[in-house]
Image 1: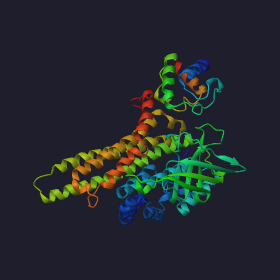
Image 2 (image 1 turned 90 degrees about the vertical axis):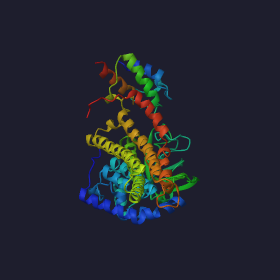
Image 3 (image 1 turned 135 degrees about the horizontal axis):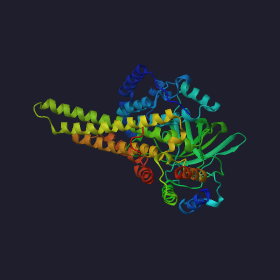
Image 4 (image 1 turned 180 degrees about the vertical axis):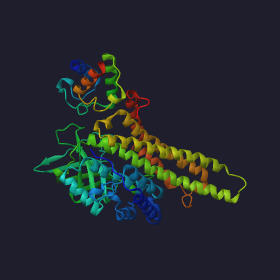
Length: 79
Length: 398
């Protein structure tokens, strides 16, 4: 349910080299050009939008690795 | 996932005694010549091969010694006492061995390779950086081009340490010509399968014996030699933590050897004037606290890493907190090395500043700056500066 919102935030803050609408939900975002600096902006935007806070255990390369994985994490944290 | 092993401590202590012996008899006596001529420390590496130490991290069941990371890092530390370049080469080789042991042992090709590593004591070099990429290990321009079970690969590498004296070379590249820059694999090629053509020399202040010139590498080999896991995984689970641990260990050996000289100097001063402790004895006590910090940082990182390995959760290695801590080890250890050698020079005075004195610390101070510059601390700090904004250390977590 969060997928579309995540895609929107990703297109604004992800600074990807591949446009978000060309990516599958499970595409590797690092291969699409996601950098560690862009991950910071992405995380802050997700925290604001969904009113959540990422705990240390969710802060890994894997969490931000795909649209699907971001949406799942957001969902877990929103519960 | 690989489960860490450990060599019996009595046997390990015997090995350490032997490493000290070759350190005194072979490595240290050649260190000055290696440094002056910026040449490969052949004698020391041959002696390590003689002790079968090039396969020390290979599990016992496969013919190696089954050393733990802590034990490998102790060997690096001991070597650091005698010659920074020899220790650095040994450490860089062990990083490649660890990548194979942790990630490739399910593959027939690599099982056969490990047999050869044990019996022939082969030395592995690596070509990870690429001209035009700007030091980012997680991107490549060059790509593996495979046809009919074989592949070709050409890479312009700004640095390949000891390229001309290694038996094998690990090269990172894009998986295929259509792959994204970050979709990388490692390939392990033997010296008869690659050619290197120098494009820059290695006339530096320190770590001169590592012979880290730039080269164009051209390799042709079998697709079996492509690592079965992506380089991103190898880097986060093994290469990144393992390299910072073994480097920091050998740097602490260099630092300890500078402090040893300082201690010798203070003792001599005390002998001359037993009634008045020299100011340098206070400085010595101070510099000891820094060395203590430096060694403890390594120990803490080994515990941290061993815990993750024991857990077997491959995703845990990509945790930003872990990446920050591993980077902190490198940054702090390399800074402490400069501080410790610098303070040891203050203790020993002009004797340490002379090149032709027993108390010289010339090579130590030149090597010390290499630790901060050869993988630039500022680049690591920039990377951490993003990660620290996200990471929140959860107090009390074990």
